[in-house]
Length: 432
Image 1: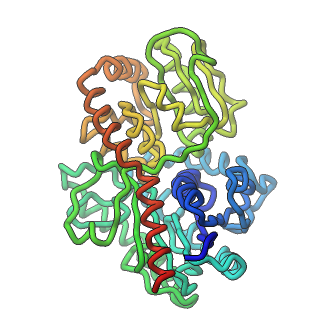
Image 2 (image 1 turned 120 degrees about the vertical axis):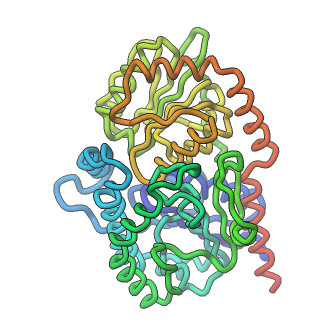
Image 3 (image 1 turned 180 degrees about the vertical axis):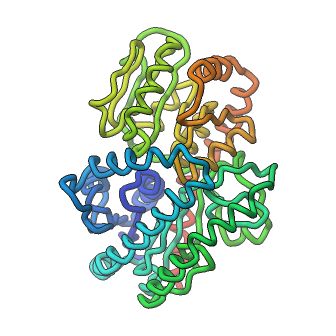
């Protein structure tokens, strides 16, 4: 294979999880002499370049209307407008959150398609790697071999013997599964037909029924710890390769003791890049956790100036999360899959307070397997949360079990496995 062959990485727009997963595998390819190039949404301009990668920038969606034309203000407004819907059941959120979000993603794909085609023509990659919940027809229609990577909860790879995606339903209780699937189908059938027509018109293969993305005919990867994963038939494993976790490297060094002197357990509190924009919720959690007296690191998000930390707390807008988690003893999280993976790889028990989409599925899986506790995000009892923190910190048996999972992940890091699979595909294609 020619040295410095080009691999184009396309992460989902304005989302840290897909970018961080692809970045980790791109680091492996770069170390092996290949040239990763990232196609980045304009809201992430400079992020990939800041990590030493070539970067092509495009507008992943139409510009929003109104005075808040870009930046975190747009997402802050979206989160605050939808916070009332996050309080609803997952069945209700199919109508209020999931369906509108799929419609937005479909419109964004149509808007971005000609720009991504121009980037593909310019970069002329030997291979494309995509991590996006919705299809990018420009990739599937390019004629260039491509890899699909899934950094969301794997229930998005539907199976009738598993709970429906976005439901937050337990694997051990099938009541409600059929009703949820029927409601999802009723709400999305027409939208899916329209998006499928667009994809095929642009030269991509037809979408599978009620799925908004394509599987790759070359290589499909998904990231989820084996200890948390769902049971699947053997045929699934032949089509999809699981990576236990894909954790990026190269973050700045962070030491808790440099910011919070003292001793005792350390809590990490994060609602993710979007959840943190609900600053009223984040402030409520900060206030409750502060009353426990434990040292706490807070990922404050882009609206950090609206959050006031308590004593024995330290926070920043964005933290080098994988390294910080290794110094912590408990994770309080919204349940985003990237944060979940990083928490499991650090061996941490969790309290999960989901907001939307696959966060509910992650929260339920953590609860089902005893890795932590799922709580009502907006209706939790402050006293119960404080007591749960104490119980999880004192549970040595759970901590030992999580340490064994952590050690197993470290023996087979997903970033290396994923990077090797992508590199192996590229090598095979160059020899064919």
